[in-house]
Figure (cartoon, rainbow, N blue to C red):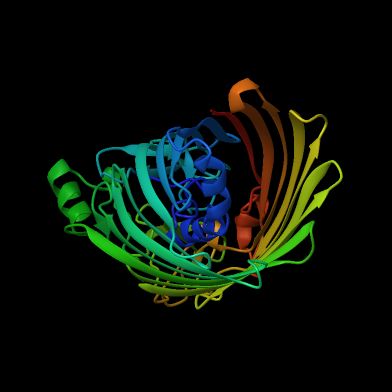
Length: 439
């Protein structure tokens, strides 16, 4: 995969830590699902969804999601999930705009692309298809103890991920209090198009060489042979407390340790002089380990004609990247079979300690550096609506539409020369639309 979108991909959306958080929430509700499905133990509960995600003038994605759930008696639930998504569109390389046109080498080394004067450098060759499959099993061991285990696999052109997870929960106080412990492990293989660039090596431009042979030799000298991998281990501790007949509180703490190849092989940095003119383009370099902590609290309540929840999440890591997320959903039932839901989310993060929007030519190279705005200072918000309609026979249709805006910010860097004439931190906007059907 030649580039990664910042919200769908991230390996934000593919991170095992995120999957573990979702798994823990699902585990808390397992007994409820089992009770509901046990009424028809021969039936499957099927959910299918089609989602479109589009950034303004950048990445577009179409994702198909299918889930199936079946209860076996009162104590066991099988969950299956299949996701297929296709991603296309230009993505920011990390280089800065210039007053003259720029030429960049494609990740494979087979070709170039050109960026007009004053425009943010985007690589328009991005295209990938990802397939992911998940399987999970939940078991009520005793009236107080419940177990959850699962596994998943994901494959795309240049990336493969496999993982397992397990969690156990214990009910107390007539199940008004639930404690949860979850663990997960994933193993990812990274095999970038064109090979892994040597950290902070210079991008080789074909036009600077007199022959294809000398160009290819120079390009190959910037590449490391073979694929690489990374491993992620997660632990999560959680508690759910019923506060009253209408309100409950959930809180958890997560610890995630990531080791291995964490550099984005498709991101570069511009090296500029005191006039802001690019002198060189370097491939980024990131540390090979990352330790992350997360704290989450959520309260949910049943109202006379709906349901509302409020949550806060705090994340921090040894890259000095910290974030705060505030989120709420309010679902209102217009009738017994028709509801509308409002979704609001605000996100703010500070930059990683090695993030730099560009490098200065007259300063020594740092050990680590990245101009990827996804790990820079930013704020973002989401506004969304969803409508659902319950049909006969237990079927349900829902429609979701959301607007997302991300506002990258300068982390305190002094902008030299002509770079002051350009927007180095452009706002990103995106629309998400989803149709779901359950039966």
